[in-house]
View 1 (cartoon, rainbow, N blue to C red):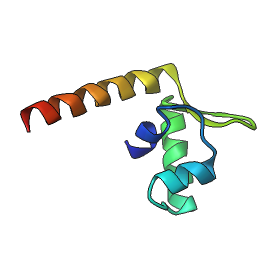
View 2: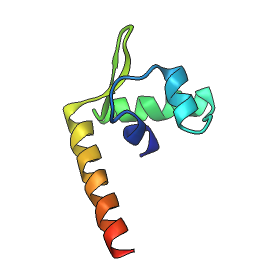
View 3: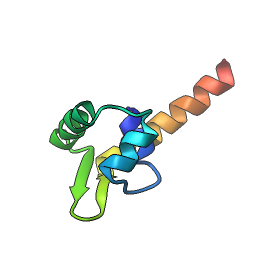
View 4: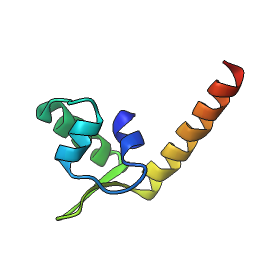
Length: 74
């Protein structure tokens, strides 16, 4: 879910995404991105990088709500 969270503001290259995800190894990052693409949460836009799909943005919205709820009860 960290990848989904980091892609929230917009498109990122794999290098920038790896840095924002705490230096995840390129192999693991590409495997996770492939999995997220397979379930239509992330899309690769040539020359622009990775971005959330509409479904991915919907998931991110739910994660933001859950974070706000957790902060309010914790």
